[in-house]
View 1 (cartoon, rainbow, N blue to C red):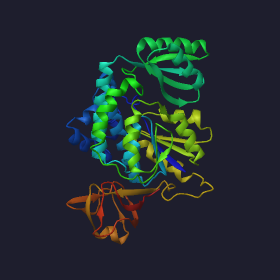
View 2 (cartoon, helix red, strand yellow):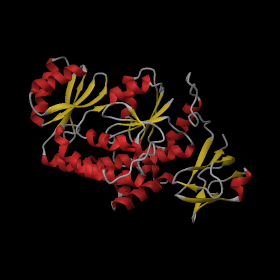
View 3 (spheres, rainbow, N blue to C red):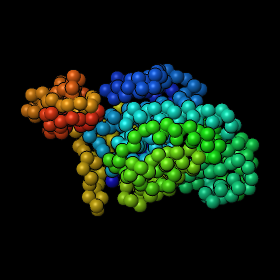
View 4 (tube, rainbow, N blue to C red):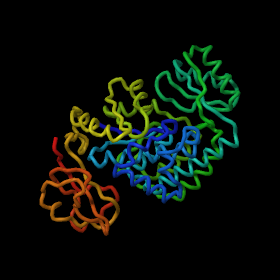
Length: 392
């Protein structure tokens, strides 16, 4: 079974949007720019490392990049049976599962970044990675520091992140080394995220969360707060609020996914941080990441060669590397063209019909093997319209 995972703040890199600029999925960048009144295209293409590292920029840039990657993967027809995101990535997971509308998610992520930036500016804080020490021993180091320092991320076996005030972080790092840690090093961040020092951000964000409609997710989403799968829309306002001041239980989430039968972990978004954590935490898991358009074919080849589990294969999980999906450009009433109904071979740029006044244009060349929306059906944005088999 396949789970899609989504990275959090820290995975961003300058120019990470360049590879996607000419891809059809880039339209999400323009849509998000309209929603936030920010030039997100420039953020993904031109912003230097120092400015991109700022919390309000890093979170929005990482989220939008993950959504562009997800959209591109969805156009191929690849699907997951569950979603999970690390910290900020939880918003990506909820959007991917249909629990959050894209525009609502963009606004929430923008507000989250601003709120956490403001909280960090008001209260001096930082984070540090502790390597090669058991979780309980890291907690003991924090307790012995007797100050404002807590575990913030349980990332993988032997890899824990702590957060708090700089002086208390230094004390806890020194204590961790005396307890046997291989390394204890400060991270280049400007806030004590996922600790009680983020309470002002939590309170501000909760006001924005209460203005948003949460829907029942189409697939379960695993939460950072309790490392459990949730498929009820009513769970998420409290979970997202608690997330800002609670540790990210990523190691526990990966183990729970493994226990629940997931064998293939696909990271969607910039970087390969989560792919590396899967390697440490899930020894038997298959690992893939998609961060550029060039990774799409490799993903499909990997999924088409995957072995089904004893429980059977979920629909949409295993595809031929030559299969692609054409998706709706917007929400509205679908009207197919003649070629869409005839099952003919089409070329790149051919129109398969209209959704309202917008044309449904194929980004691929190939033979139409199936139409997934009927004449007069009301479709949603990026809903699959037709299934193609391209030339190998």
